[in-house]
Amino acid sequence: MADIFRIETDRTHLSWSGRLPSELEAKEPAGRLAISLSTSKPTNIKIWRPGLPEEVVNDIDVQVGPRLYEETNYNLLLSSTDGKQVELIHRDPTILKSLHSSTGGNIIHGSINFRSQIGRSRFSVYVAGKIDYEFEIEVLMRLHQQRPNEGFAAAAIEVSEKSRA
Image 1 (tube, rainbow, N blue to C red):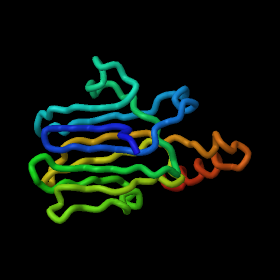
Image 2 (image 1 turned 60 degrees about the horizontal axis):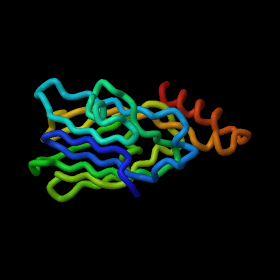
Image 3 (image 1 turned 180 degrees about the vertical axis):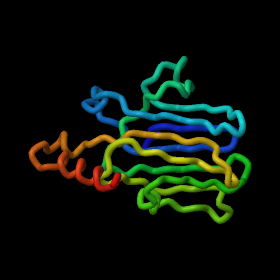
Image 4 (image 1 turned 90 degrees about the vertical axis):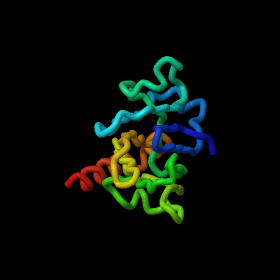
């Protein structure tokens, strides 16, 4: 598995890895990676995301990111740079159920799979109980593109609408 994107601040390092897009998928529209820094303290940030020119790759106003898909396993590694406890929050705790924390809580690692959830998904990164930053990605639908006559789009819309109710 290769890194799909990385976010590094003066307090944390986050690496999101998985299968890189195929050549065919690379021609699809870009995905989304939007980052919001906490307002409590200025943070130095380094962002790595493939396919962007070097002059804009660290610009948090640029919200272009990798394509991420439903029903796909991704690996996440989140670590504190100073040994303090880190926490990753998402509105749906089932997405985080395969993540594990180290003994001191300064490392979180494991697998993320959105199952059939599609659309925007927001994560919050905390260090020692204080927010460091948030990031939002967009989960795209792959099964509908591969097998358009099997009802995946309708099922995904139904699940999405139920989750908002």
